Image (cartoon, rainbow, N blue to C red; front, side, top):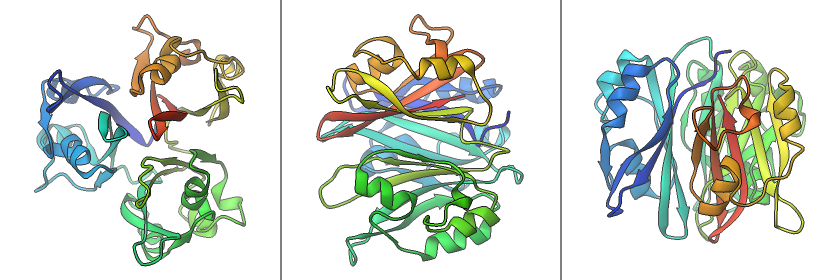
Length: 307
């Protein structure tokens, strides 16, 4: 199965916390790009990870040529055309930067957007940055509209403060851009809040088609009523995976496995069958990225991408 996301990386502060160094990554068959990336470090405001650190919010870079991207030659050789960096903060302190790199294959319908609340109209969101591939009509519509709080995928994420996974977007009458998504072949949407700043809101949305999903499986984990275990709130994949579905019925304790480690440390994690913390939901899947959603220094949810 082809996925919309081609490469996933985690960049973490070094011991002095003044530069970002390579933490882990998922590269599939792009071994040359992996080798080129592992040796890099980024200062504050340098390269895509450093820019996201300095900006304090997600960044979408739609082209690498003549930009601040530091691995352009290797990325072009690997067929990569777009980069997204999401900083993970706990209060004022950076925990890590998660980077997604995508290809420009015309058959892959999808989009990655950063929504921000408007200064003039505080109760609406508009697209700050976005990558839409060949879906130009959908891009035009998306960049022109304002979405009220509580409406559409970005507005619902803003209103709840929680990640939301939405299936069959084009068939949902009450969702803004539903007909436009249907025409663009977009079926699945994932929205993630990435900033809890009191005056500025940033929402990430990942939109994809059935032929090229965001990832092979997506899960949203939240705390139970007592706040002492993680439970799977939502899970979605194009094809069924029995072990994954069984795993989603099992609560996770703090510090146990990859998910429990994210809860314990507040750090995003990439895990795979080469690690001692291997989880059974990874059967027939090569790796899992787990990103914490943190508000006021406390964990609210964990979003996982299984590749």
